[in-house]
Amino acid sequence: MEQRITPAMVTSSTLTGLNSSLSALERTTEELSSGRKILEPSDNPYGASQVIDLQSELDGLATYESAAENGIAWESTASSAMASMNSAVQRVRELVVEAANGTNNQGDREAIAQEVEQLTETIKQEANTQYAGQYVFSGTATTTAPYLQGEEDEYQGNGEAITRAVGPSSTVTISIEISQLLGNGAASEDGKLLDTLRTIASQLRGGTPEDLEALSETDLGQLDANLETLSSLQATAGSRIDQLEAAVSRNEGLQSTITQGLSSVYDANLAEASIAYANEQAAYEAALRAGATIVQESLLNFLQ
Figure 1 (cartoon, rainbow, N blue to C red):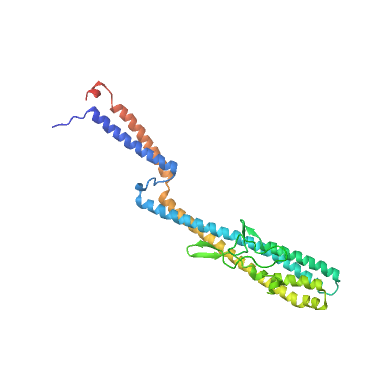
Figure 2 (tube, one colour):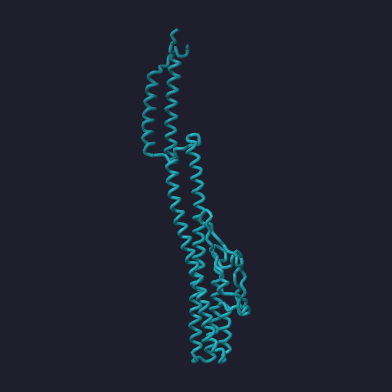
């Protein structure tokens, strides 16, 4: 039995072809507008799972990079404060040498003692340096100033380390134990910087031969030892900055590699998509014209 092809069948077949052509055109349009070739997980399940894994890796690396950059800023702030301390201690050393040469009268030594005390307060102010509202020299007690201004010289922070995670199972300590340098003042007799500075000011005001002898012998030697401790802390901060900068560079390199891999899986080839769009648009328009020619509406269409 022969099957007759009716106008309705021709119309249906034509519409099916047009809809298929339109769907392909719309798909390519979405690829061009989004820049992505995986628009839904069902487009490429394996590729979609790769995209999720790679994006997760990128997010993790971005977090590590942010932590390393924060650490660099924190350590740079601490380094700047210690550089200012170094300048102040060097000035104290000059004053001690000047006071110990025997040419100054007691009034001169009183004035020098006053400048030493001012420099001591400057050093304590530098020890109270903050980064982003946190004290950089207080250990984990970042909301507590390490030292109070005035005669109280006891350290207020703690010795717990602050770290930054800069990679999987990789951390860098960024806290500086400034109490190793400054100590707890004259009352503690610990020989550290604040104790040394308070002792120098006291001996300048004392003015006895014993005081003057201590200035040139004991105090200068103790001041030099404090400067060595300060230099060691500065070197530690510098090496940590190098570590953190290396971590940033490493993370940036990994991000670049993973981004390229993600792009190869996820991003559309715009040149290919543009050519496909032009071809599909031409095909769709041609199908519309052909359909209009083939499907001739008449009264018979309504009688089928």
